[in-house]
Image (cartoon, rainbow, N blue to C red):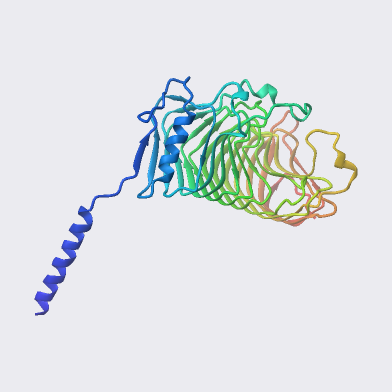
Length: 404
């Protein structure tokens, strides 16, 4: 009887396996933009077709949706993809999405914008071509109050549990990728490119975001490779190549009221090549808000001919004279900062600048194995400059540290 029961059990398990294995897999509903009327001629405006397809994909209730952009050049004047959606959406771009060359032809802040969406996946071998060359000479807002508002390439607002993979962003008019109130988002394998002299073309910019991961990404642009703004927490950056550009920047912070803390940042296995800055934290003097910058780890960072490899600047003022200069020190508190295994070459003699606030000195700054030599025309020795810094030092230290 026992052997009969065993055979019966084996047969039941086998039939169950065959039944499960034979069930058809539910594939996502495919929306090929070209088959739905989009024209890959680089001239016809496909914005209405794209938004119509999005609406259909977003409203579909049974199973996921897949929007596919095949090879070819699809001109878009500007699009907004808005949720919430009934199902996960995969957006695969193998062709080129082409922005208007004339910046005034984009009637919104962001050329391609995603809002109020969960479970969005963007991938493909395609390119977002911002055609920014005509716009860059107009980017003079620091001296021209009537400057035109230029659009960023792609934006995400209130987008959660999502990702972007392998896409190329080329020649944005302003920033390439902008994130606001985005949570649990992965960026991997992305390529971001604009000339080193293209103004305000930040690679990845984020504010009020949490639990984001950026990895295996190449960024060369005319501003910050990555800009981390107010309210961003739990950010992990790894295996990123940055250059040209202004480095990975936290801030600027403290200029406006109601700014939020920035905390729990990890930057590891990153290469800065020919950038103006590498590791950078910038806060305004006489801050309008009192906020905390804390729990930062920078580890295994290579500097190749970087202007300011390590730069904490709590007297930030990009276009002097600044009205805050006579109003006192920064109220942004920087603390619990670890710099470990930072090595390479600096263009300038000052390889490490730690210029902290007198009113709120930097606390618990930990330096471990720093080796940055001067690669300029002067002798190869480099120096560190410190103001109002408390912390500890261990391991090899080039330049000689100046921490209390």
